[in-house]
Image (tube, rainbow, N blue to C red; front, side, top):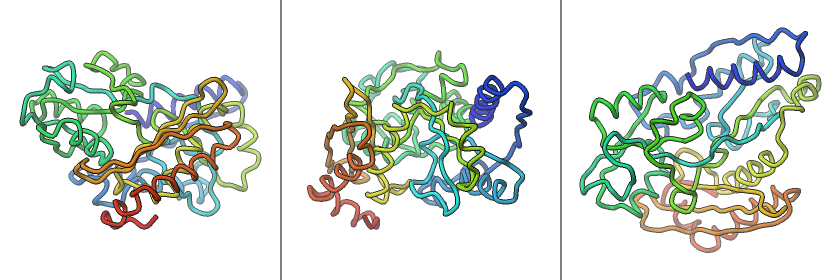
Length: 297
């Protein structure tokens, strides 16, 4: 449902720009959508959501693919590019519960659902009395599992809920100071073949410069840290008074060790800011955490 909303949103935006153009949607189900009984970190990571779409573009069955940027691997395959990063929706995490309004309200032993290692680490660090349980499936499936009583609460991206008209399910939003968002969270990206200059030019009006700079910094940070579904890390940038301010962290799986930093600079230096923060985090102990996780940075 969310993937279809994203595709239809870009379809509508493109038709508004080019009324004479026929824009059709090629519906596809990826491996990431099909395998729902295991955490992403165990079955191949975020690439499971994009590989089939890239094959469709290579074969000429599709011209572009629309992604949630938090699901796009940090390194695209050779021959592909992100032509557009659209304006960000609410980047925050959201607590969804039928019983509790805030995380602090959950009693000891309450089960909270998430399959994000980032969220798991943050929750375990602040609320060690809670029990974290895996949660997979589309937004509707996750909400159904909550409503069936499998969880006391679940944590989802606020952007997805709002885009699907489900904002009323949000008990409370978690500020970045409490739950630093995932890299790219809330932003949409348009991928195409790198040699399709015609498409890159056509899609350019959909690019949002501020969001693109922020996501570029976040992805540079994550890329240098070999970020993936196996890595509990967060990265979130905002433009404040003309400066790009990036916050990031790396943690162990239990949330017992955190290395975090803040770095700012000109939006035009987004890539450099992300890399510089990664080097700082590595120098201050993130290298040891990543090594223990089996991640090479």
